[in-house]
Amino acid sequence: MKKRIVSVLLALCMALALLPGSALAAGPGWNASNFTLENGEATVKSFPDVHYAGEVEVPETFDGCPVTKIGSRAFDSCAAVTGITLPETVRAIGDYAFRACTALEYVYLPPAVNTVGEHAFEGCSSSLIIFGKLGSYAEQVAAANNLVFLSSEMPFTDVTPGDWFYWHVYSVYTTRLMNGMSATTFAPNLEMSRAMLATVLYRMEGSPDVSGLICPFADVPAGEWYTNAVIWCADKGIVQGVSETVFAPKDNVTREQTVTMFSRYCAKLYGCDVSGAAGALDRFADADRVMAYAVEPFGWAVENGIINGMSSDVPTLAPQNTATRAQVAKMLICVIQYLSDEGYIVE
Image 1: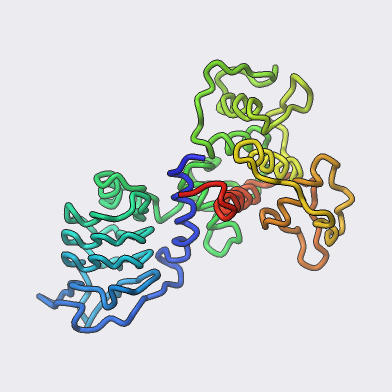
Image 2 (image 1 turned 30 degrees about the vertical axis):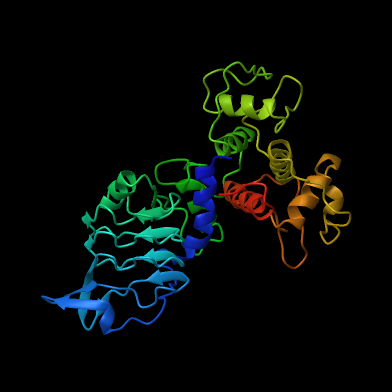
C-alpha cells in the first residue's frame, strides 16, 4: 500500500473528530502571557505548555479581541502536540510558528488565512496534513511545503454529519480511494458493483502499472474505467471470475464476496493470517447461510472488527445481501487500521 495513503488515513483516524463543527479539545489553559493585543486584535505569541500532548484548539477571542494571527515561533518545539485547529478569525501565521512540532499530524487553516511564514512548518513530519477549504490559501501552503492537503468539507448532499458512515466516506473520498457518483452525491446506500470493489482495491496500492498483464475475462474490454483494476486484481489472485472467462463487472457484490476479496487482499499482498477462529460466527443467527468459501474470511473479519452484524438485537451477517458503498467505505478503513495495528504496514 502506498505510504502516503496509509499516513493520511491513519492520521485521519486521529484528526477527524477535531475538524470544525465537531466537539473540540481546547488543550491547556490560555492566559494573558500567551497573547499580545494591538489595535483591537490578538496575536498568539506562545503556547501555554510546550510539553502538552494531544490536540489543540486555539481560542477565537482573547480579552474580547479576535485572534487574527499566530505569531512567530508560537508553537516552536511543542513536540507532543498532535493536532491544531485555528479559529476562523486567523488571517496570518508567522515564521517558524510550528517549527519542530514533530508529532503534529494535522493543522486546520481557515479560509481567512492569506499569509504564512516561509519556515512555518520547518521540522514537522512530511506526513502532516493541512486541512482547509478547496480553493483557499491553505491548498497553496500545502503544495509549497510538500504536504498533504485535504478539504475540510465534502461536496455530497447525501452524506451529513451524524450519519454512521460520515467519517468513513470522508476518509475514502479525501484520499481518492472512492469517488462520488456525481459532483454532489456519494450514493451511500447504492449497491457496490464488482468493478467498483476491484477499483477500490487497486487504488489502495496506488493504481500500479498493468503493462504486460493479460486480462483473463472476455467481458472486461480495454479502456473501461475498471479495466486496469480488474486485470491487476486478477493477476494478484484477489478477485476471481464467476467463470474462467467471465468477471461480471456490473453485477452487485455481496457482503460475503466483499469480505472474501478484502481477506485475499490482506493475505496475498501482506501475508496476513486470515483464518478465522472456530466458532467466530456462532453468535450470528444466519451463520449457516454463509457459503463455504466465505466462512474463514467472515470469521477473520468479525474477529478483527472489519465487519459487524446487521442487527444488535439478533445479530445477523446477511452474507448474500448486496454490500452498499457506505458499508464498503467502512470496511476499507477498518482493513487499513487492521493492517497497521498488526504491524503489516507502517507509516
